[in-house]
Image (cartoon, rainbow, N blue to C red):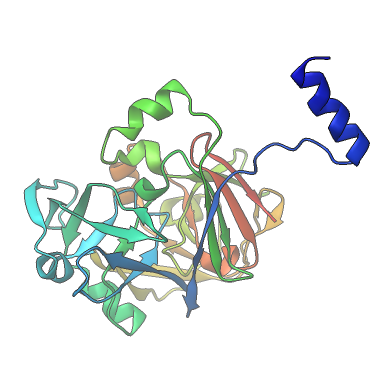
Amino acid sequence: MNRLHLVLAATLLTGTSLTLAQPLITTIPIVYQKGVPYVRIVSTRKQFRPMRFILDTGASPTVFSKFTASGLNMTGCGNYERGDTAAMYVRQINATCGEIPLKHVAISTDITNISLGCGHWVDGLLGTDYFRSKIVTIDFKNNKLEIQEPESKGLLATLFDGIPFCDRHDSVFVTVKTPASLRPLLFLLDTGSTRTFIDLKVAKDLGMDLATKGQKIRTVGGYSTAFESHHFSGRCEGHVLPAQIYANDLSRLSWIYMKHIDGIVGTDFLQAFRVHINFQTRAVSFE
């Protein structure tokens, strides 16, 4: 009897079974306040305080406040040309989230509007470049983030791993079905947005009943105007979206992502679920 037969015989005799190694899952606490999920970022420079970042799946690159980036002595390596917001690439990140290193290049810009909107200082936005090719569960019910490396990566995922970030590749979209539309609507899944939005033109085309007076809302790019509606009927992955929705001009967002975006799914919907995202295959499910 050879060694393999002996191992199998011993297994049967002892009543135990051979099991495969379980995938390693990193669990990171989430602090959820006023519709905004935050995670803790730690610099490898021991003298620098822990940082508060918004967990933001609507941001493809990770973003640092320019003041935080300055305090960390990050090195600028070129202007980041996107829209009318002044920003630059920075490197020498040397920071981790849940002991997983951040990517080696990020964006630095003024996010004072974000801090004002949240009511406290925000050091940055943890974008989807951090999750590239990983399997992620955002558990709003239990205030935790779970990150798992996939067992294998495809050729495309391997190639993109070497790129600091790529907007169209890293972002996650879901489809929304509504009786008023003949086609599924494309919504950006955005944990950095406290509200669910629909593009203003799409809302008018669907004949939605909108408030006559708009509300000022803060974004990373400044202020914009949104119109409230209480009668939206839509489903995402079979789950009913909030009836209260806001219509906003999303043409700039469509320009950034180089595709027409009909809306944004925010935490007013997501907070009820464990959101599973495979950032390699872009598969999304809600539990």
